[in-house]
Length: 186
Image (cartoon, rainbow, N blue to C red; front, side, top):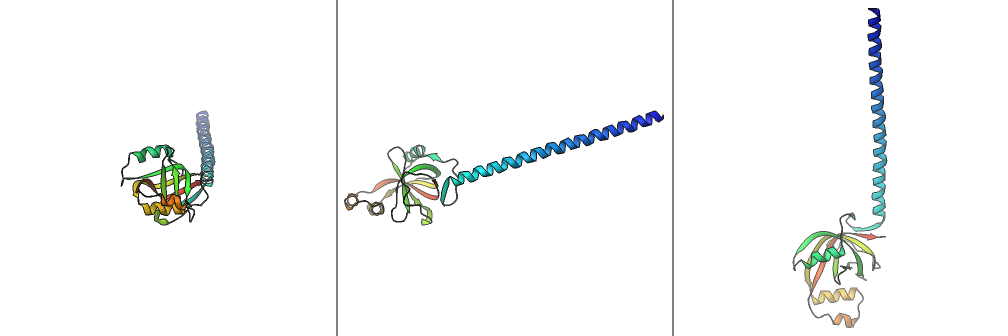
């Protein structure tokens, strides 16, 4: 009987010891997972910071993800009528900028057309020396008609000659964009 009692005690001790070892293993595995998650989240955070560092922001802070290429946006514009609008984000190359304040810019749609970009509520401007640089814009794309006077005003802002300004004599259908945020690639 005494042998049975000792055997049961040893059996219980072994079970308790094994349970403790399993708990230690759980703690070790959980600790390793936590360290891995922390390293992973730090890496993602650094990548986000690097992405933001690759761009200078104007207006609302936006992200570069999901921006349509200019050629794809050109297809959307071709299917729009005067008065139509759509919220969108696009990436394109700057062709022209207002030389007075940087209060508007024209972007290349890669199909021979350009989009006239103004900034929401006249709330921000872009640098005046960014022709040829890539930008990502977020906001509202629309098609409208621009009066002769407004076209002449933009031509004057762009530094066009008096002859070029005087040659503007007709209302023009224009692809337009009201940007609430701009990323300028560094």
